[in-house]
Image (cartoon, rainbow, N blue to C red; front, side, top):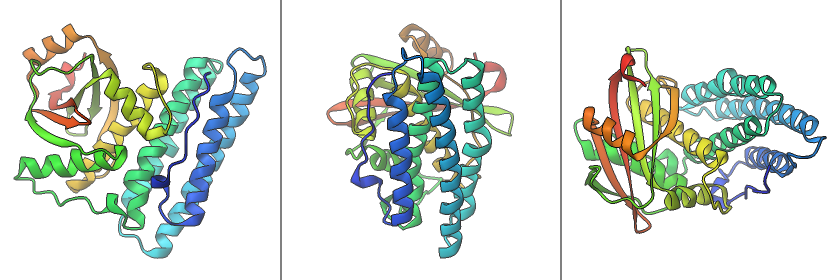
Length: 301
């Protein structure tokens, strides 16, 4: 499976000992799962038992965290609980189905670890820290009539919380802008209004690996399943934060499809259907872009 170990970082602490202890335990379970050897005959049984234990412990943690939020009268309780419910009722069951359908294949196990670890990390930093009023809970106010206000609140602020970097909005992005070793990642979200939200992330491979490394406290040297699935879950957290910022339920946008595009396909899509928003950002002396667009269902490839 690989020996990547996820390192607990001080910024993951929210200041409530019982919750912080449970979060550390969930990371420890993920580390144990990622340490198993795919070639070991006992690994399938070990994965089965470990994943069952992670799920049981995660559900127990959600219940206890929700009880704590009710106890302190946390104003964001209902929205936070909806995010837990999506993980409980949709994400975990879908991952389990894939595991059993594939007889606990290495790919399915890596997907489970990547999605769960990415979700957990993003959720702690964006949502759980808000319970105690830490910086992620004090996002800048959104002025829907100001594009810059929306960008700061919905994209820049959450990404700074996740990656701890000084992220600056530069201006509009065009495919002519130079992003070295660019990777093109498309995420499509379904909505109840009959249109889909398409998000295109354009990021150099080095920056993508660096971002995943900062998030998990480990070094990645190649784009693997854990890196990809973790970025997918971070994107989902950003979409949920955006929905809440505009007074919508956090599950208003459901991920329908995600995949990497080749450079040629990306440029063709960009030319045929220029995104409504094409935004260029600067971080750590590198650039990345986020393109956002609403499209009819029929346009999803």
